[in-house]
Length: 322
Image (cartoon, rainbow, N blue to C red; front, top):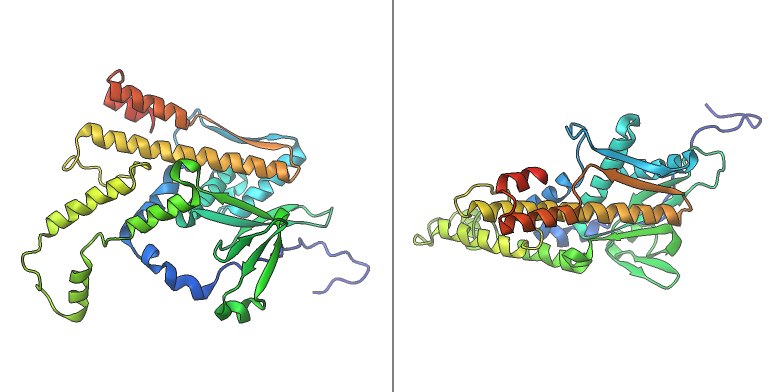
């Protein structure tokens, strides 16, 4: 039903974005990363512990936004545009889900640009919104960003070059503790270097119908070497590859890696919150996310150090960082 000229259109205006969301022609170049089991597990595990879920039993947990009512409402609109789950009116869950979504994007790509939509309607309930888009073929210029659209995708997007004002882009990268964008992408490439399940020659023989071409090959030793390699590549992160058995590690070594991974997730959480608060400031919103009741990255390092020195029992250190 069309509104009459005398009747104002009260329907909310949908955000309109300029950036190309993705480039279909470039997807195949990512397949070595996206198809590798180690990379897949690693990128899935990173965001899982960044923020607690609704079922968290932490009674001391307090997550919210400080600021005036109007600014807090606008900040929540920004976060809701990031979140896959609206939070059902639960501010704590909206904030948590938005932080997890940014963490997941960073885990996949190492760097993610978001386009900022600003409403030009002063009566609109939604003043701001964000939408992620591909960082591939994105060039930073002094006053703007350029998206160089691949030839194969130009018909779909209708342009060969897309100009994006710098003030319309929010760019988030992995923290410096993990090497930033380039260092993190290097970690993913190193993880994808070897097939975790079986060597390439065995996979090739399997697909071609030739089996047992290397009868003396020791698969157990291959997997052991892959596990060692994985632990070296992810030493900074502390990822254990979902292996919590004591078959290949001492109890101390396992707990040390688990605590290190929790430290990594805390570093990522604090980094994303800092970036979101800086974004609110850019948008002239007097609003700031606060989180109380979760161990900080500094707290976890202190506990890990105490456990290493023997002044805190293993079980106590593990429990306090859970």
